[in-house]
Image 1: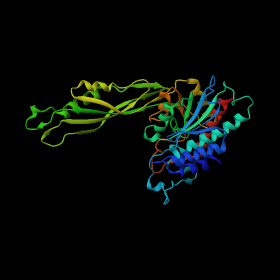
Image 2: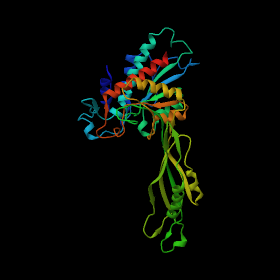
Image 3: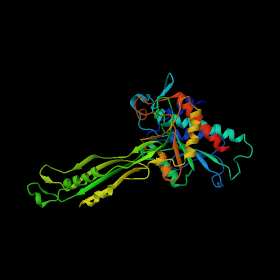
Image 4: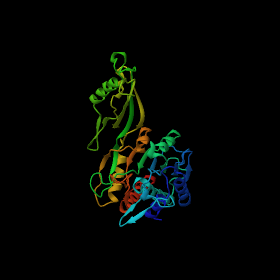
Length: 378
């Protein structure tokens, strides 16, 4: 089975509301194609391991190939009359929901995992009962599209690889036709500012406390805050901070007793904007609704080793780059895993009606993952 066939099988399985069937396929394939220790956890994550046994892990280190098999809801054109997802091949690309984000990269990682395990079995004295040997893990998570549900569940229950290659998109970042190695990305913190006041008739202004005025005082503080930035891989990764929604008041002739504002904040590794300052305004509370962590790889040797394999797998010259979008790499990095991102998806492909992925790039990803994994296990 090649990467096109495996991607076709994975993409055809609906997984935007229920990832069970896609997880079943991945689990069964791994059990049939490898001798790895394959496990399925309570939420549906599929995790396979070769090399050092997890309980016997001593001096060795673990490398994980990480993806997710959930997708966003498909467009009507991406589903057939029986409810299956449609995959079409046109020239050198595959079209369909999940091709780019990210079942194509999951397929490439599955094949690379199998090939690396086969290479491992041909090396005397590596893996098995050797507690000093390194280990290779494949993990496909659920719930990435809804806040990293699967990754967080696995981490809370001890999933802790030393290193990880996360197969999110890194193609066409430095230049067209090149798959780069992402060493940092932004996070996202979504929060709410709630201002409380006292209702009164609008003809008696002094009898009430205007919650909208208090909220706008808080907005003034937000506008004066400087969003952090950090220099990574020769680039400046810049955070941002913006008020995106407002809800307040009940009628034209009533002093409002409540006003709520939402804030979209793009975070960078190491720093956060001091949004808690808005609580210096009387009657104002600030609550965090979602906090997707940023990621930065601090192990230069690991990043360079992946870059070397990526360079060997393509004719172009890949670079170490940054990415604007939060991924499961953020959760892993927060838990102590050194992560890079390397995958087939290109900017503007994920979540679209015409989502597609290059077959050449999928093959490139498979070869890069395989090369890094085999070198790791040797």
